[in-house]
Length: 323
Ligand code: GRG
Image (tube, rainbow, N blue to C red; front, top):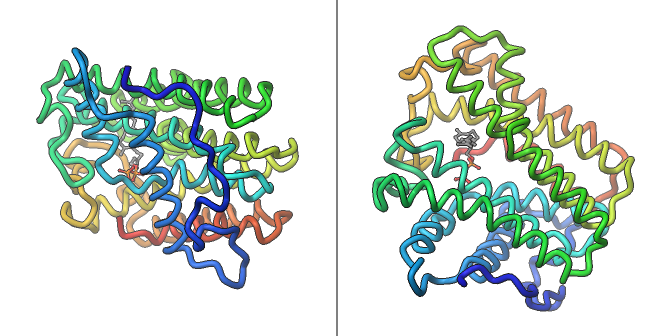
């Protein structure tokens, strides 16, 4: 059994590097924060999805190949930042953040398969099926998706998160990843290839395909950190705007960045006849839209104190990023 399912190791604030202490508006440096939090997530993922052994070793090797390939870890970082923004401990949201990253990685593996986008480069390395073949890659995605819920359920309870908050978070995450969310968005995307989509159709597509997991990450992290309903509602608004801004920025990178820079093939969308923000409203229009969405995400945080500083900085990062 390679998925650790008992309890998360005791994570106390003292076990974090000094730079991981709670940020204040005065001393907050996003770059350092992203590095610290990504390292925390990385360590936990290494532990949760352990090194391969036994008859399923090839499967675990394939799962770890994509999971530990150095993504930005943005969704778990958002979950941790949302948890902190309402005064929760990092421990409360860490397993949840890792579960979201496992689901995100599954979606990337499946999205790259020949029956979907048929890509050969992801996170700067060959795609999963190019290394392990289509059957194992499909199963690696299935394994990550299913095991994510075990990680979330078992390990969050050992972090002494209230069961009611955990159950709501499990349901919300399943909804965001499933037919009403990411999977549904992927279907709209596939069926829309070669068709002219309107701006509002594109927004629905990305709200499901990208935005739903952003919203679940932020709301789940906050809920597990003890947020009250009004805080969750404001964070839902924040994450919805942020998710769309992130996607518009992704469309811009597809047009403007190189494969070396972002670790995946670029210029793909146009070649596949996919509607994108730059194709609908131009590069400058897309940049303006992304910045406007980031500003509206910030507005949603108006009632939060300086503990929401990472969330505020992440809004700008989502649209100005080069990766
Ligand atoms: C196959 C069920 C299924 C869903 C696929 C999420 C998705 C739906 C496909 C991935 C391809 C894609 C371009 C999705 C849009 C969201 C997006 C920009 C994903 C990449 O996320 P990053 O930039 O990647 O956070 P890293 O590698 O940094 O984690």
